[in-house]
Amino acid sequence: MIINYKEFCTLESKKSQEDFFKKADALIKKYSTSSKDEDSRTEYIIKTSAGDYAVTLNKHENGKVYSIFGRFEDLEKAKKDEYIKQMIGLSGKANFHAHTAEEALDEFKKFAEKITKK
Image (cartoon, rainbow, N blue to C red; front, top):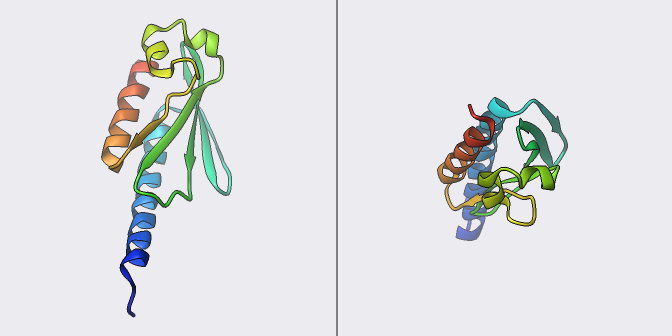
């Protein structure tokens, strides 16, 4: 089978994203108290002293950026924690984007350990 470079990159990207999703799912489950699986994404809740942190993994990402999306449900409560306040700014979001899966996973893990004290 002959496949052009663009198709090859798309297939490689999809495989990399699928591998990332599996690793991210396992990592997030170490910290979460619940998860909800939907067709295009999985949502998790991580309990913290600053309130619930909702994490979302999109299953059908095909790009070269690896992402874990997160936001605090109670923005005012979250802002009382100085570390979290620095991470979320005004939006309540603490998202992790990187060009390598390892970097995205490492950054999320550091954050999750800090906010859950694990």
